[in-house]
Amino acid sequence: MKITIAKNAGFCFGVKRAYDLTCVNSKNCTDIYILGKLVHNDDVCEDLYKRGIKETKSIDNLEEGTIIFTAHGVGPGLYEKATNKGLKIIDTTCPKVMKAQRLAKNFAEKGFQVLLFGDKSHKEVKSIREWSNNKAKIISSLAEIKKIKLDPEKKYYLLSQTTQNVQEFQKIVDYLENKLKDFSYYNTICPSTGDRQKEIRKLARENDLVLVVGGRDSANSKRLFEIARELNKNTFFLENETEIPEKAVQKARSIAIAAGASTPEWVIEKILKKLEKIANK
Ligand code: SF4
Image 1 (cartoon, protein in one colour):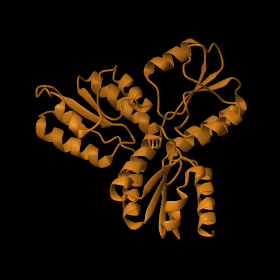
Image 2 (cartoon, protein in one colour; image 1 turned 180 degrees about the horizontal axis):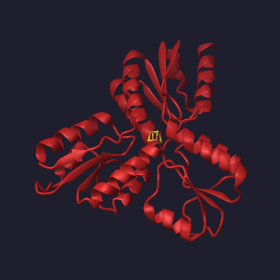
Image 3 (cartoon, helix red, strand yellow; image 1 turned 45 degrees about the horizontal axis):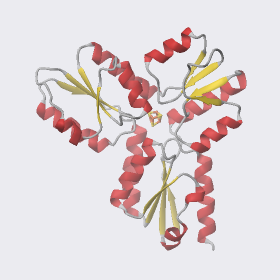
């Protein structure tokens, strides 16, 4: 059995930064809370709870202590609210998300209708929209933008959630360039996302079976799974080694392992060990 691990598997720069900042500060601060999950990965969250870091859904009930804003970012209202409450803020917003937030703010202020390609329910998308003073219109696909009535007299500016599908973004750009007189855009899809998507296309074509490792709520992991599944029906999504599809693995001669940006290395290592055990049975 040949096993190939994607070169881009595991923590991206932004998640590693958020994790490291959180771990370092857990030693220096008491009463430390994360607003929501640091990353969409239960193994990472468990590791942080063991370090004494608690999770909170809202800062409403916090009167003191430290609040960590996650790599997905938050809107301007939360910075203000936390500051007014006297909370210490540790901001782990990924610099690439911050860039999308700043662009949304600047272009909305300049009178552009900001269009944001992304998943409406995702934290990062909500935070970017809040920076546009809640004026950005969120679109999740080319099909959706085709249904929207566009005003040819208006100026439009397109941005993207950092973990979106690069090819779909390009299709939306092509469509809007044809439809609008005053249209500009900035591709805010993270290069790490693009690299992973490119690599998984190759791996899905070249291997009998693909394992995509990631948290169930991880947008970028789910996207990798969708891309691989389209090219190779023998693709499985798993959170950790307990979910390895043993029968399918036994039949495969070549296996590719890919992982989302929030998947820690230690989970990939456990999967690898278990695959080796299955191969030696
Ligand atoms: S995927 Fe890119 S944008 Fe998202 S946290 Fe990682 S480095 Fe930042």
